[in-house]
Image 1 (cartoon, rainbow over the protein chains, first blue to last red):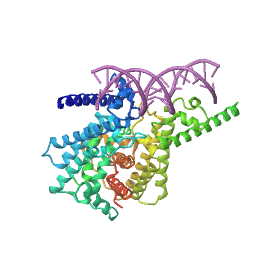
Image 2: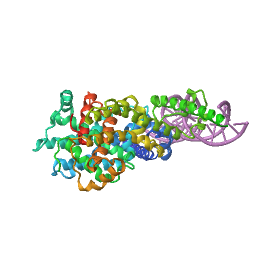
Image 3: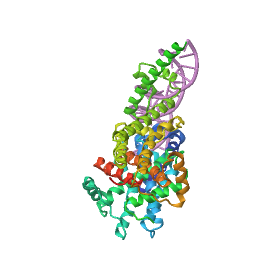
Image 4: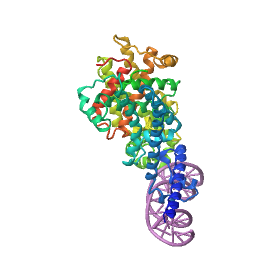
Length: 230
Length: 230
DNA sequence: GTCTATAACGAGATAGAC
DNA sequence: GTCTATCTCGTTATAGAC
């Protein structure tokens, strides 16, 4: 029984992977809004209704692609963080930022899927939250490491933001002082602003040497969360 | 002949405006990807194919909406800048940032249209460049004003970025030192990173008091381009 | 029980004849 | 400007193969 179920499960997993792969390919050609179950089925030599054995609806297929994309980005960031564990936090911060940018340039359509306009009529289920948080946790970890070492700039907060920053720190960065949590969230969003602008063409005719521009901007982002300039 | 053509041109312009208005309304309801020429036509009591007289394709209608959106945002920013012409540049900077955020929250689908994922298969024509640049010019103007006054922080640049920053300054901010041009471009992208994250739901469960969070982040963005803290 | 194939519904997008 | 014909889409019901 276990072997039979194992074989079936394996076959099912293979078909599921093939569907996602074909869907990803189609995502790169037509975009998320035009992701078509029928075209995916066609590419696999199946019939559209057969896909419903694997994904109850088009939205569920989209959700799977979104989670995969977040995980792929998160894993890339984690690898960049772990590549040089002895490097000082500011250097690791820049390395992670560059890894995010590199992943985005290598997977533009998956980036658009998770950080671009929301797909109309699609509401992301809670399942995506954990995967989405991975990249944030990497950034938090680097700043946390810096706070355990010496030489960290303390960041003043206006009273207006005090309570909110304390809540942030308590919620997802308990090792961090509130004065670091709020700027970290801002830097997180700003990092993706830089990446998104490059990817979506806003830098056309504006920024030429994007590598150098990004490295410098990422370094200054690191400073903005209290990491000393390297 | 000129009167006949003038009347015809006027009628054509009126219908064109009505189409765009209906399309904008639908954009706000369904999103850009599902912009349906059919529904627009239905709302106007026309038949879908009749629209092709005014917009040769859905893409041309999209282009018109994109230009209108950039112009609407640009005008909002300009009004915020001009509302308090005597305020010091850091305050005007924050006012413009908040105007951008306010416009985005009030026009989420139009924001997604111009700063979200590019519509697949759609290449923005050069016609959009001028409108897209408006908001950038507002930001540049504020920093330029600050540079003509006293008390501006000089921003060091790594040699790696020196040439690029000088090209940037020469291209679109001739009154600005290169050390200000590059951070300004970065701040421009980062501003839209903050706005986009809030609008597209990345701040859900992360940032609660978004107004206070944004004001503080915008102020620090201003500092990053050399505007003193207010 | 698990899967695939057939057929169909209602909808939108578009080309072309009139 | 209008009307029709033809395409694709997501989705479901159903029937049958393994």
